[in-house]
Length: 145
Image 1: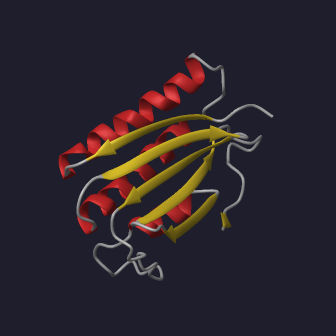
Image 2: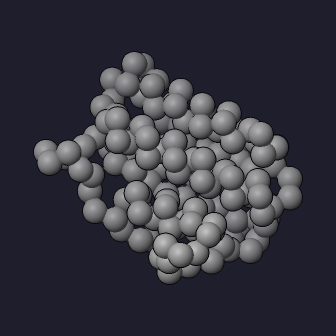
Image 3: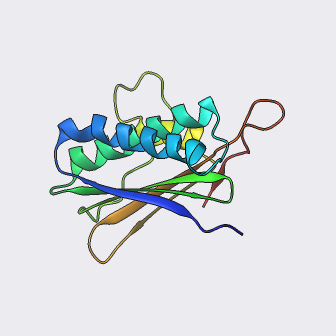
């Protein structure tokens, strides 16, 4: 088994959501260029989408900075966002008529695994995406952890 490859970054303001996406893009590009790992275009887009949604929520609902960790291991990229609020977000049932609050619904629709838990200070939300597409051009099925 290979050692996980990871990058961490802290973000303070709502304007830094684009910087979080750029961090994800740079990390995925380095997985390909430096480490020779396959990362599909689908995975590139899904990781950037998950980073955007999770960091947006952290900046919107929790005071102080949020921390983003991206880890590549065992054929998947794990996106972890920590923020200072201990309140776990509610996962609403899909409702196309409802405006807003679809972030977790979007993340859960595109990830392979998802978990959230309280920390001694704050909470962590973690979701993973398979890096390489399967033979049919899709990723592995969703697993809620």
